[in-house]
Length: 516
Ligand code: XMP
Image (tube, rainbow, N blue to C red):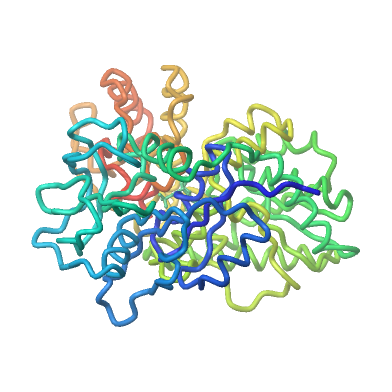
């Protein structure tokens, strides 16, 4: 008989970082599943048949516990003996459940804050007196009944961390899952291994097998096509689908005209080595025509998403495919607002950008629950070539979302050339390995310059270079000034459309990585 694996369930209250909690657990080799916030005690007990449920985490969420449609918790869960950790909204709903006082914060806290650890015990064991934590909340817990003790506070939040005196119930107002919380990993280790007593007995390989089997079962004797952009996600999805479907699979690469310089050739070169049906569709003209007069970013994304599907449908007719496979990953889903209770940040071309009517039996997304670095791990397991495993992520809509305003020939030229310069200089300086992404954005602003003693009036181009682990959060990279200087000099010298180069020094959040 197969032994049950230790599991932590995450109750989804709609927070942007709900899945990040789950993956923080999985990256410690402990399995985690996300379940709806209103799962009943009976439903959770039923899951114990399948998993060795060792603890629950209540995620954050955008609501106020006093809001009319505030997501609720089955309070009977607190009577069970399972360890529970509430984060942000989860912290507040726990406080509300035990008749503590939750009020709108006098001063809302967004971003990095320093918490004073009053009692470094339990989940906070081993932490210093002052901890750098990341918060984003409007309500705050002001007091709790005597059965609880306060473990930490901040200037604006009297109960920033608490625990029950006898039961294993904890609350944190901050987000340990976000990398800006300096010792978030330590807090997770404390909860997972010391409080919940989990064993690290789960591995990524288990997921690969499951995904291949699911694709096999779903497609059965039919055929499928897969949208292949050459980025890591769609490439891994292609490799998985190839294992599951062999010759029943056709990979379609759409050149929409917003690809980086040399991209189409590089992808052709890489995939000619794969044993799959591989089609390149030249679709520049139809995409550029469609986007001719579009300036609004969400509209751009949706039009690109729709046009992609139309191209895939045409190719499916030719091959007789009934299924479309996509390399959608979790951040695409969450940012497109597709999780219950979560807000739409931007419509990723393959999720929120999809048209309502689609001529496919079904869209299959084997990587939908994963983050980029988990996808890279799978890529390594599948022995994909290094140049693929280490590729920078590239958005489906391509350079179209790196040109603000109208997509003119002039701006397309400027973004392609400046992007190439940034790639070359970052590589030359040996910085590529530590950066998540590095590229340029052509803004819709023109500014005066002087080139060769004459007045010049050109575009302002922004350099964006970020460090990240999974793209849900990112920090702007502290690129050495001499590298920035070289990039800026080359761009203004080699790209005639540009007069000014600026460096984007915003983290995500509050910014996003791409500008549109
Ligand atoms: P943002 O800009 O939301 O980007 O911080 C997070 C990551 O996702 C990539 N991205 C996309 N990938 N289709 C994709 O396949 C899209 O529509 C899309 N938009 C953004 C982005 O490059 C970054 O790595």
